[in-house]
Image 1: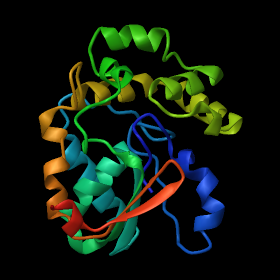
Image 2: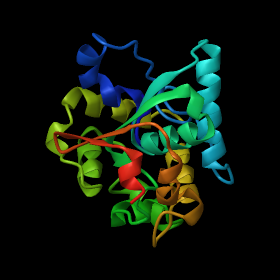
Image 3: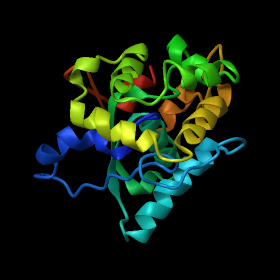
Length: 216
């Protein structure tokens, strides 16, 4: 389970009780987020970084094949890993879509990827605070009412760790700008290369896509 761009692994905690009845769950913080060491993503190829992280993670745990589940940037990570190592992926599950499938992005995200402007945003609207977590999600088009107070506090504490803002700021600048998601991270044309079934969950609905349908 790979969390979204701004989030931490605890994002998926409401799903643990149900899913652990059927699956063995592995839910890491992505590098630079949560309780991991912070990273400056400037000039890092996120595609290589993402697929290498998942591969090495699975290798260290001696896991050969998995279902992958991701949200937003986490969904992007799942896609690029499946493209590079199709033999190691059973199915792909997306919660709310994946970064890069649509080059169009909410204006708030595009501003976060724009140097100078994002510095102002991180000092004001995106400044770490317990209430600010829900405000930021609202700006990204996510219903803040579904975010628990416990999760808001946990994410706030993670954002207060030294270097946290550098990880998010440099990641945003690497993958998107004022106009759109940068072309090298747009994966919509790669969908036809995926062999696995894709499950997409959005707005409390579960839809099953098979890639022959997406190829039309």
